[in-house]
Length: 202
Figure 1 (cartoon, rainbow, N blue to C red):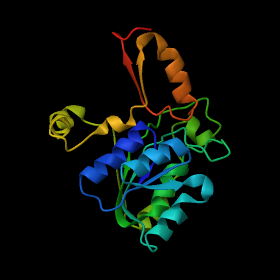
Figure 2: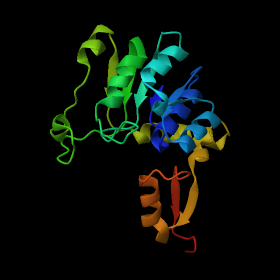
Figure 3: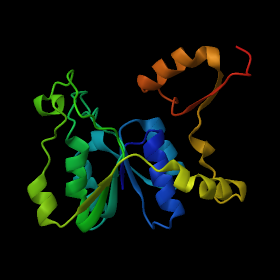
């Protein structure tokens, strides 16, 4: 299961499907992104409909997901817009089965002075360590070793086994970069991934 249906989360879910996962759940609340998750074969979970961990447990007969991936990071926020940096990590603890694995791919900072959360200001989270320990879960994190995977991914695309371009919503000239970033950052409907092409006429 994946928390976050931005470009990173969608690619995490897509990668799980390519690796043979029988079910992939993608949690978000933006309908355009959840539609993309469904189009690639994942099960969309709208966290504005209720506790996403409970929804995943209900969808798995109480077992939880075998693996979970955090693709939101320190800017995680509830449906009302309040920031809760710990929210997605704790939701993973509650929705991944005992002895399951958790990957933290979203960005967490060593310090975030502007955060409304006092712990996050110092790069810390109110993490449900007790539940995590009791369930014997594992966490892996860090930046992706891109060079270790790029040739294999290139070949999957070349031979038609993978088609990740489905997340690209716009091909735009470089002159529109600022506008594109603003629209993406505002989570405007339909702005999921922008490819900037310097040779394209403005």
